[in-house]
Amino acid sequence: MILLQGGDFLMGAEDPEGIPEDGEGPKRQVRLRPFSIGAFAVTNAQFEGFVADTEYKTTAERIGWSHVFHMLLHPAKRKAITDVPAETPWWYPVEDACWKRPEGVGSTLDGRGNHPVVHVSWWDASAYCEWSGTTLPTEAQWEFAARGGHTSKFPWGDTLTPDGVHRCNVWQGRFPGQNTAEDGFVGTAPVDAFAPNDFGLFNVVGNVWEWCKDQFSCDYHTITSNRDPVYVGNHETKSARGGSFLCHHSYCSRYRLGARVGNAAGTTCSNLGFRVALS
Image 1 (cartoon, helix red, strand yellow):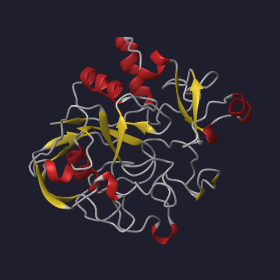
Image 2 (cartoon, rainbow, N blue to C red):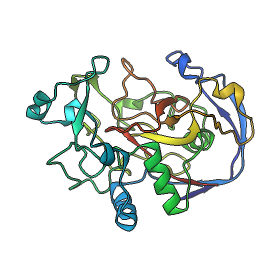
Image 3 (cartoon, rainbow, N blue to C red):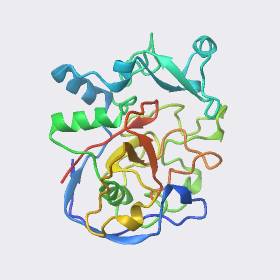
């Protein structure tokens, strides 16, 4: 955990490539009290410790399936799955896929102990927090920490690959069928891959989406306080931040620090994880 002293920062985004319907702006000055936040997303090894101690069953384990990105599946397994959603044909509903079997039957966590845990719902992440004596970060805490004291699009500046150097795990090529993996990864990367930001946080951009405490609203920046904002509504759409290994300018430019997305609290998939905080 990294202790941050809080203070004032410019929150939100008004980028030309932004997504207005996500409620990325307007930008505004926000003040936060001190808090701590994980330097890394929660790993498979850490989540395994939680499950071993509590015998917790995740949402995906209880319902018996989860969404897996098509390029992570063996062609034979892809061919056997016929109920692929027409609007997002790159997401395959895979029987028995869950945090410990990320690609379903036959897959394991071998070699991925230091990768971020995925296939965890907002409820699963919250249960881990309760066990560990932490919380999910609010959107404001997440963005303050991810920015590392800067106002740029990314922790290192406004260019995604400065001097041609990859600084995060996102998509290269043509989404969704061609990934050149120039950054070294097709799926998730270890949580300590790439350099940290100036506050010492790793992989706040790309790799996996990270659940936040807030319920999602496209009006977030106009209905929440400028001091320690958090939105608690009466619906089950929750906020997530940071983008993932699937983000690409042609499809999902939400790898920017001010970008945000909402998912149903029970959503589980190959690119959705979390990190913890402590107020």
